[in-house]
Image (tube, rainbow, N blue to C red; front, side):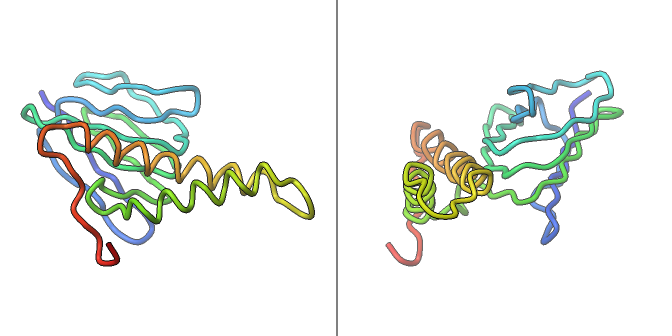
Length: 147
């Protein structure tokens, strides 16, 4: 029996579909893959890429953290933010990563290390998702409005 996957943010339902073969998520203790008939689990998620497979197709999302529950072949992700790879503005993600790295390396003044690290993790997740999509055949991201 395949999985049902729901990814929800405070702003919208990002994904709600059945017939999912597997879901790979960034768990707080490391990456984990959920397959059909997985034992019930509830865990915190960190920023990182989410990959799910359905009918031989791979779909990527960038997640900025949240929580996941698995029960009765249903995976529910309550995320702070989640973006599909084709929604990510590559230039903006690269710029956010650069700024976060700069902020962390320049520890003068009142740099909030935790905030800067969280921003870096979010930006890196977005860039990794786009890079993974680019490596797939025919997977170049669509141009954004400002490119």
